[in-house]
Structure formats: C-alpha cells, structure tokens
Amino acid sequence: MQNYYKVPCPTPDVIESKLASLPVGVEIIVAEAAQIIGFAAFSSIYPGPSLTSGLFMKELFVTAEARGAGVGKALVRAVARIAVEQGHKRVDWTADRDNPALLSFYAGLGALAQQEKVFCRLSGEALLSLSQV
Image (cartoon, rainbow, N blue to C red):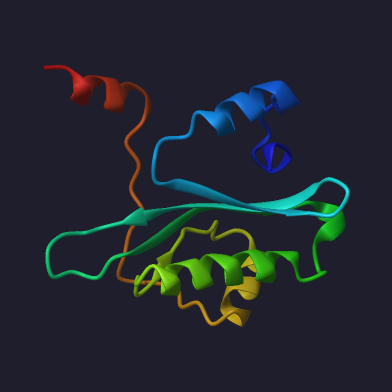
C-alpha cells in the first residue's frame, strides 16, 4: 500500500506498535498464508438517533502476489458478515476514481457508487488553523 501512495514502509516493529495502540472501535481482519497477504481495517459508525448505523472500511489491501485469488473478496465478505452480526445495515468505504480495476472489483461485489456523496478532508494548515481556539 505504501508503494501505491509512494510513501516509505515502516519497519515491522513500528507497524506492530501502531496496531497494538489502535483506538477502541477500530478492528482489523488479516488474511495470511505463511505471511500476511492482505487486511481490511474498519470501525463502527453511528450517524445519530434513528439513523442507520454501519461499518466504515478505512483500508482494504491485498499484496500484488495474492490479487486475483479471492483474498480481497474474502476480506470484504468477513467485514460484511461482522456488519450483519452486529446489526449494522451497511458498509461504507472510499475508492480512488483513477483505479478502474478496483472500482470494477467493488462493483462485482454488488457495491454501488454513491454519486450524491462527496468525500471531504481537513488536513495540513487548514486542520491546524481550524483547531485553534
């Protein structure tokens, strides 16, 4: 995943430390064969009283070597199973528009692109500025 986003990969010790300190409510499903070949990270979302709760899948990653072998589908299926078991009515996530193979994969799972939604981000100077009292 770091390769895709062109950022350096942390050491296994750093990854393990970060995973151990995840906040309550964040869950990760790992697919492994002799080593980790994929994962899905997600958390519960509760939009408000009388509104439908769900899971938000923050990351879905499968190693290049394991792609096409059903690992991604198995991971999303596991997230869907957890959503249903916990009484949630949906699973949401974002995807890069410039990745047609990924969009096709999600469509093949039955996921529908939500054209009425816009993904927003507050970061950098804007985040710092807004956070000031």
